[in-house]
Length: 266
Length: 75
Image (cartoon, rainbow over all chains, first blue to last red; front, side, top):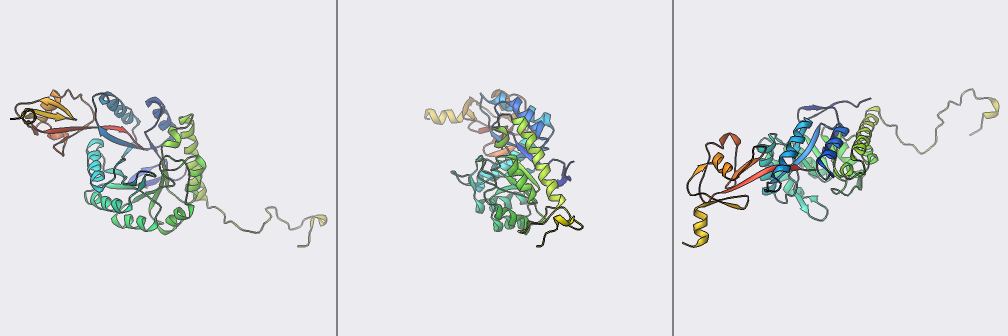
């Protein structure tokens, strides 16, 4: 059974998984993993072309094009508003999309987004017509500001990029979901294993963006399928309605009309 | 005129590589001189993005700087 379809900036998607195109041991393995994931949105980036890499860059492009997925270019490596905005403009021209995964880093140790620069860059890019997907922390007030600016999607981190530590602050992520009930929320970064993705989806997150957990798996295509199933299962669980936790036990088998020797006085 | 100044007046720089250019040419011609193959890329001329539709009309002059940006993998 497939979880419900959803909308991202006006595009209807069936898969709730976004997947990155980096870190695979070969282009062929990347292709197999992306196909196995069933993802309809893939993240890409851009760089200055060097003479040595000119051919590989075009080969990469042809492979990506053959997948027929929506492209979500990122502004990876940017540490200032100026860099991020310039990179976004280049990405729009290069990939012919106004979608942008906006990354503005504030610290090189944990690649934590700079919330102040992120808000400023988001304001500029939305004014220029971009559909911004901000990579942000799980700070509620920051996310509210980004929503106020017109973001239809927010992508808070689960943990720092590439760490595979899962959801480090479930309280903050749950609060975000409760306080921004209409916002499309994806957990981006830090997902290490399928159960991390299930946890986020059961919270009511709309999707998951991941890369390293698949690309660095022993069998990326197998892991991509595992994530696809986990994300779908987590979403179905959310849509199905998870029972509330309780402290006292409650028998699942009816006790009415039990044989006399099984009737206990409580 | 110093060697550096002379070089600036009769070359363009394409991704840090100097190419001899003594008179203005179209961006399309400049890309051919830089042996840029067909494909997916975007050109930045002196810090300004030049849409592909304007490659024929945009002019490149000695001393100009070109950056060629290409797709790459990303997370």
